[in-house]
Length: 465
Image 1: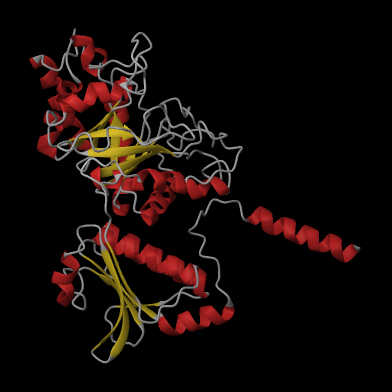
Image 2: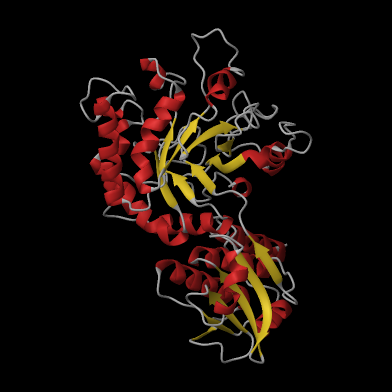
């Protein structure tokens, strides 16, 4: 009986040690035989460390190999030894330079994993066109090791299908998270920019491991204060932490900000003073955050201000912001989730009515963000009819990772099949086979992340991140 009690206490200690913070980046030791085999194949690492992203890739690989294989790999300046992992781009590695043309076909974020023999030595290449692709490749390699995959004849070529892969945080400046079930906001606005929580870096690591390349810091029901100088300084501090991991910062913009922050009497998108205010605000933001991604906007929906308050269209409003961002390379993600209780029209059809006729009227750097279904993140609903109805307008799909309608953080629900079903749905917009996925430029997920130690409210809900 005593032995049983001791065993139970030992198990309890082990459970407590697994608090979920490390997510899928635990890098727990492999089985001894598998670890020994991989150590023999991955004895050394050759990796550049001249840029922040190069250092992030190098450090992640060392962290992963040390945890998985039980000892740190040898760091080498050249692939002079056999069985070495070589990281780099054609510009940062002489070993990878001959692959420039092949790698170029993978795009900016793509990567190549290949076991090869070069100069009589066996090497494992993690190669990409840009540093961020190398980092993505490192995470892929570590994932293969974690799952016990064979590295024999390794040949992996990956390139993201969607250009924008974004998390939307519905976080308010007071720390409250709308529809959040995992604690308070990750962003401690009161201590930024002086205190930069190490957790911000772990957040960036987790996102990069999934290929996420953007984060919207604040709620779509936005406060104009998010664009005030004091908060732009704080946002810039977060952008500095995220940048090495290929993550650009975006902000939800309140359409009436020129009135609330700028003291103007109107926010009419055709008013020259309003246009000037937004241009100046964009210049101010990019002076602090050179790689700022752009704005997410909820307008004329659920009481939020918008261009229709002035008799203007959604295209007029979106183009106002797009023109301000265009010189800097920024984009506007303009939400198509619009409905007003005072209108008699069915809320399921209102977005289609308001947006389909505007196809082709938006600036090239406007992306209309459309929910996966026509209602509001319901457990079951058909795909949104705007997919396939706006062929001249970039679209991105918005899904809800936080489980507003699926049991909060209490019920266990894996959302992958729901997203897959929508993406593979046939719109028949160009005949059979015109799936929703074919019309997308990007995808956004309303985050389920908060200050909870597990990040998502439970270990299981991490699978929906």
